[in-house]
Image (cartoon, rainbow, N blue to C red; front, side):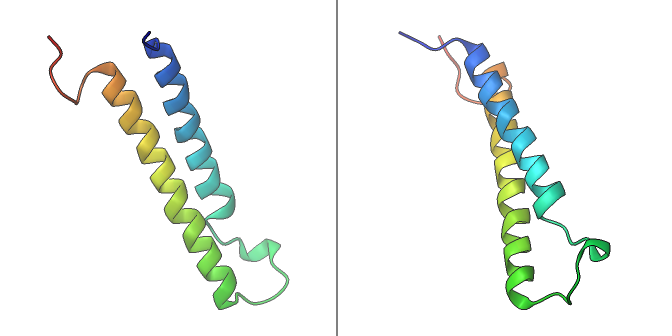
Length: 76
């Protein structure tokens, strides 16, 4: 039993959307919304959100491109 390509397109799209939202919402500093100065712990957490958000988005793009057949091995 094989999974239909639509399944992988949906998973890839979800990863891209969640990754972009993570970068946009949690991965950047908004000085207008913060009451106190930036602490090293907050900067580290923000950097981790940025890194993993980009990683999720790139992973989703790879799944989409792979499912479309643009990269990967040749199937007989």
